[in-house]
Length: 344
Image 1 (cartoon, rainbow, N blue to C red):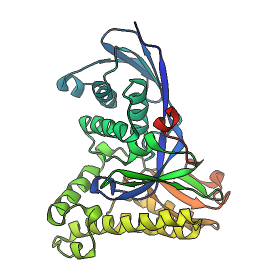
Image 2: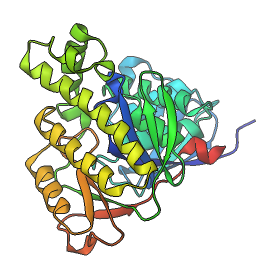
Image 3: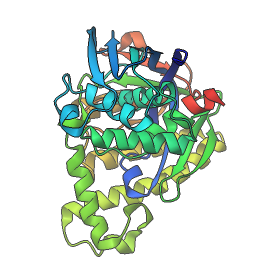
Image 4: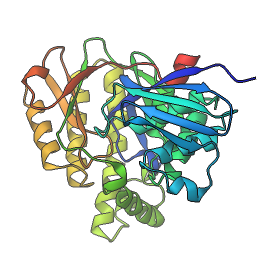
């Protein structure tokens, strides 16, 4: 018997603070947002998946239900690799039609790939906890050539309305952190689009791995450990991770206590570290952070995501940022449920 159609929406995410910490066993404080990627899977039997999407392409594209590595590598356009990888890992009972729609802008740094992954995992019947779904999605990204950490799929699967998700990547323990009702989170495109596959992301991962080979996991290191790194580049990369984890701890406390000024100041210092020690910002991103941070009522602003372009997130009083006055697109976003939270 052919299963019934299934539909799921994977939310995008904004990371309030804690970037490039997830693959270093550190801390991060992201939140799932209302913009997302919706997937409808209509099983038809057979061994092929027919994919169509207004977000990527209008024509119907074909994927074998269980392609071998060679077949998957030859799929065009490249985003089909990710769908094939999720299908291979989630193992839907049969083939069918997949329809993808999105309100989340692609390539803006709001984790469109993780949103797609968690939605696909849900409609393909993967099941499991947010951590289970996140691990499956991470493996799918790795198979498609992008060495991502667990942060994006974990918050896209396990976010909760009204909260950010404090994640400790050394244990995968999570804690919901309330976002005060009088806080407004604004996301603005920098105008510099990027894709992780084509950015310096993999190089930063490799640099962190080289530093960790000397001092251990960077998210668990301290200032004394940093002194053991003789290579100045590796020391700067590690210093970002060490100081960022402390900023995440303090920011979670600030939100819990309703201290928006304190949380915003930590976000701004996070951006300075990402620009200096980690070197993943761009002139467009830096200029936008400076402009938003100068507005009355804005507590702080920073790059969000892996960097090399994408979006900036600002924490402000309601209405402090006039979206109509910006040269690029912007959105007011609120913390929402992830796919597994919605299911439960």
